[in-house]
Image (tube, rainbow, N blue to C red):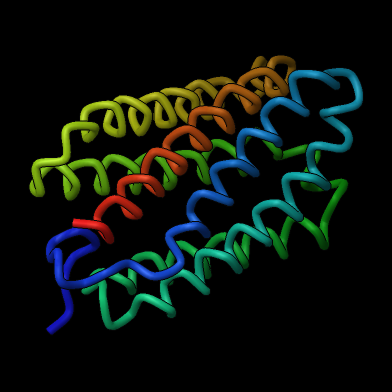
Length: 187
């Protein structure tokens, strides 16, 4: 019988390191965006496109490799497929991507934030104390997404910094989640 992501100590989550790697990539992307604000908006569309595409592929691998251990693996698969499709659309339309980048990033972050909040509540049910921090980070991701979506013209001016902060928040969430998954393997 399949389990939720952390419900059984008999079930181990395979490839937890993929989530860790995605978190590290998010943080690297966030720091890079902070360090290159002028060039970032132009190159952000390309980097973001490739990053979302790779993130989607990694999430698909994670979900498929854990389909027997996690009953909600389909949600991870759906998120990975969505990221893969969005990444491909962004890669193939770079000029359009630059024009509507705040919307792409805003909706993508909104999805990531809701997924983070859902995972934090799932982790709470297993008595893992760090669930509150994960919930906070998920809410922070949603806050950044709303800031981007509320006023895309102003967001276009500050999108570089909001994107950097959102990537770093998402990266910290993924790293914390990865260590919770790893620790679950040892219980």
